[in-house]
Image (cartoon, rainbow, N blue to C red; front, side, top):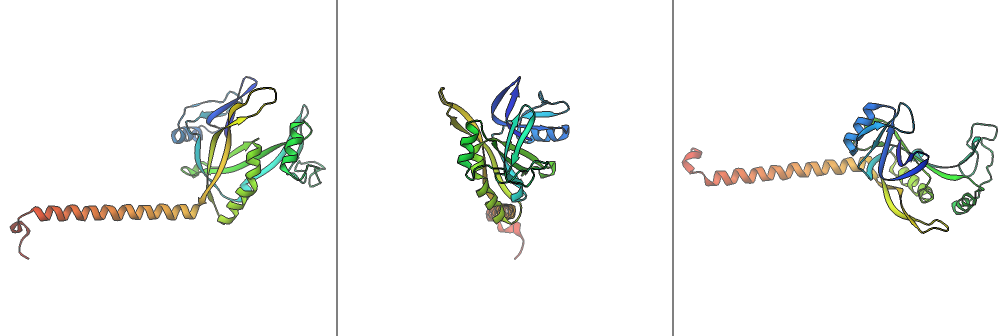
Length: 238
């Protein structure tokens, strides 16, 4: 799991870099090596490891548009009481598949949530690390309404790629207006489409070919310069 908020005591602690949590120590070790930071036991869960990384931006691979989705959730003291996709309920109970009653627009849903009468937006992204895909899949869950607004465009970009796509998952600084208080500076998650994986591989291959060609040209130049300085008697008969 990639997180931008830690729970310190009973209070949320916004972070400026990504925090990775996993139940597998080898995965935590690999994440720390790749993104910086040190592995430590997670303070919020048993048998879980946490890496507070040095990275505020990381390249990831999203395999399918289905791996980026937006949901609406509301909890009370009894647990999760509302879980939908904005149109129908998703909860595994008798309501599943029935109309949830949420407003059609995300702006109206946001207003209802602010008044305490509606669920919050939850954007979930499932991905692999571009530089370490064999570590397996990670999940990022965000309450950002701004990210929820971008889900449609992000899914469309992933669909056009017709296969796995590279994205940048980053934290950007923004101001949060709090009624009755002065604005606070916080960081919110942003997901940027980069390119289809095939295009990225082709670009990398082309760069590699160019590097090899440049190295070959440099080598020929050096050889010609050396031969040009040697007496003809050292080169043998033509």
